[in-house]
Image 1 (cartoon, rainbow, N blue to C red):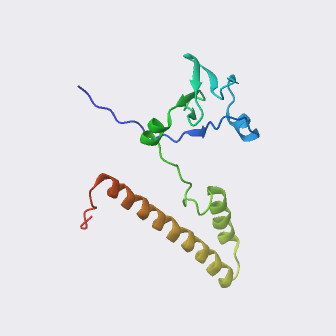
Image 2: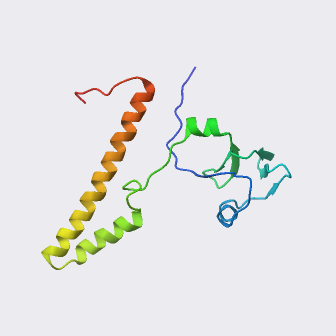
Image 3: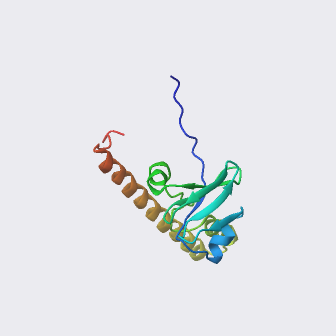
Length: 146
C-alpha cells in the first residue's frame, strides 16, 4: 500500500461555542443555521453537516467550510504562528525592517536591532519549549549531536 503525508497547509478555524458573535459571522461565509440545542448546521458541498458545541469549523483551502470534532482537530492541527511567533505579526516585522532602512542615527539603528533581537529570542525560546513538549509527549529525547 502506498503511503501519503498531508501537505503542510495553514487553515483558518474557529471553535463553535454555541452562539453567534460578530467575529463568528465574519468568519463563516457559507449558509448555516443554529438548532435549538445550540448545534450549528452548515451547508457544505456534501450536504448539511452538524457541528456540536465545542466542534471546530474549518475553512478549507478552496474556501469551503466543514466541522471537525475537537479530538480529531487536536490530532491534526497545531496553531500556525506568524513570522516571530506570538511576539509580533508579519506587519509589525515589516514596519520594523522598513524603519531600519529609514533610520539615520546609530542610536535608532541600535534600537531597531534590539527590538528584533528580543523578538527573535522570544520566538526561539517558544520554539524550543514546543519541541521539548513534543519530545516529552512522545517519550523520546532529541539527539544531542543534532
